[in-house]
Structure formats: C-alpha cells, structure tokens
Length: 269
Image (cartoon, rainbow, N blue to C red):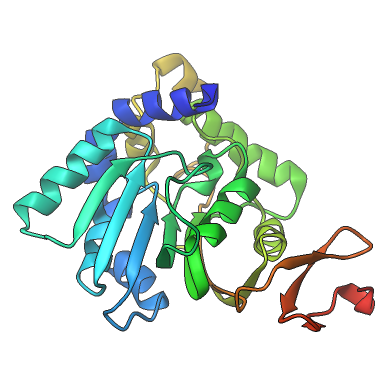
C-alpha cells in the first residue's frame, strides 16, 4: 500500500457518512445513466472499482448476474454492505482492494466500472490497465469522472480548490488526457457523454470532507459555488484479446489478430 492510499483511506473514513448521503452521489438519474451506458443483458459479471457506499454496485446488481465492489476504505465498505443487506440484494459482494493491483484473474469480468475516482489516484494509467486486464476480451469498461479545462491555468485553479477541500485529491484530468489514457490502455472508445449538472453547493461540499476552517478560508471558490465540475461518461470496449503494439512515436496501436492492426497517427505503424 502506498502512502497516498493511506491519505485516501483517512479522508474517506472521515467523510464516509456525509459522502454517502450527498445528493450528487445518490442521484438516481445519474446512476441510471451510468448503468444504461453498459448496455447489460443480465448475464454479466461486473466489477465496481472505488465502490464507496455501494450505490453503483447495487444499481448494477439489479441488471447483471453478479457484482463485486472494491474499495480501499473499510468505512465505505461497511456502509455498502449494510445497505445491500438491508435491501436484500444477494448477487453483490464487497471487498477491500487497491485499484492499482486488483486481486482478480485476467478477463474475470464482463464489465468494469469506475465512478468519480480517477482524480484521487496517483497513477490513473496503471488503474486503467488493471481495469482492462480484468475485463474479458470484448467486454465493456465504463468510467465516470470530473474533467478539467484544457487550459493549464484554469485546471490548476480547480485542483487547488479541490486539494484544499480534500487532500486525497490528486489532479483532475482534461478530457483530451482521459481519452489518451484509454487509448494507451489498449481500449477503443465507444462513446463519451458530458454533463454540467455536478456543481454542488459550496458550503455542503466543504462540510462533506469536514474541511478545517483555515483551509476553507483559503478556497478560491467563486461566488455561488465551487469551480464547475462537469461529469463525463465514456464507454469503451476491449479489442478481441489482441495485444497493444508499440508505434515508433511511442503511441500504442490496438492489434487485430496477428496480421492486422489499427493505425497510429499518420499511419506510422
């Protein structure tokens, strides 16, 4: 376990109950959109990474054969287990796990989902590669997260606010960076949907993490709320079990069988 994992665990232990009760986490329409993006048939085995209080795992359990939720924080897992027990959901289980080193075999899941977590991680590329590893060939990976401005100064403004509020925040990625991470993980992007309905009221957002008064006073939040936090949704499918091949410029290419492969920019491969 890394030192930053300890920071995440401490932060989400502190905010577990408040986080689990916040409307931007519990909103049923947002959750429904996320589940619908996976286009389930009912036979899938689903992995929910950074499951938190288990809302996403529970929603997927209503449309899939089996769901496994993993999280670093025991306090969050306790909420998830209690909720699903109370609701009588029998096809979902929870366990502690590090997203950078998932304790599952290659291709163990049909669908892998991760919601509002990449910006807390030191190494998002490693997490995406792990997600791809445990997803079967032809399976689906669904990620929902906030994204930053493409302009570095604006992105830094948002990150400064987030880190003052929650020290487990690392960096919000721009949409162009996120799409490149998927490509480098050997994934093919199927769809991207953005929305701007994830701007919480500033006082409650600070209260969720129990931000100390001195740090709250430093937050550069504009009048009316924190920097806009649009959520983004992308659904990607793995290639047919083929490896990711290197390009001369360092960008990977998705292999299709032994002979054919997708092209790199300007057909450099």
